[in-house]
Length: 85
Length: 182
Picture: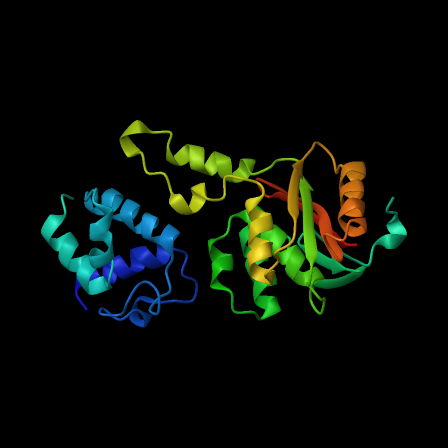
């Protein structure tokens, strides 16, 4: 697990109040929505705020969200390429 | 008009204690903040409902009171009529703080969705699959006449078989829930 993967998992657990879930419970390639972690639409909005606040990434195209928020792996790849802080 | 004798069951949550039909069913340490007390009271129920952790304090209070009073109860055609004094002010203030600074303008969607008092009624409805009428009144004190006449109407008109109603007030660690089943 890279440092960014670990950091992102901790932030997601914190911001989404995922009680009793630890970073090791979230697999890098596991789906974050639907059958995976079971996140919902409000959680998706929280992830958009997290990307902006912590990594300086403004997601203006909602269509992009589906592919970016597919898993920790896809989020980390997008953050690595686009972060401004 | 409904009278006290029509009350079938009661649940009171205050002072870190949960009392159902005059029987103490859960008591938390008084030094705990409400969030910790609510978590302990929730875990005591032994139910799998992760959404609870995402609720604001008012919804947690209403959810717990409903959960404790509805244990073993039939929720078929159960209507919901609630009231409080502070509406969602506690969460409104938290939301306001998150948008106060123009340079650090990060409104939290998970907070914003709770900036309406009747969301707590929605949380109870979702949890128990209620598809009946629900209403939420905001008043300085428990609007007994209004609530009772509304409950009376719901029952007499056949819009509900039973009604879960009462007071769910939360503002900055001060809280009180008093629910009745008519």
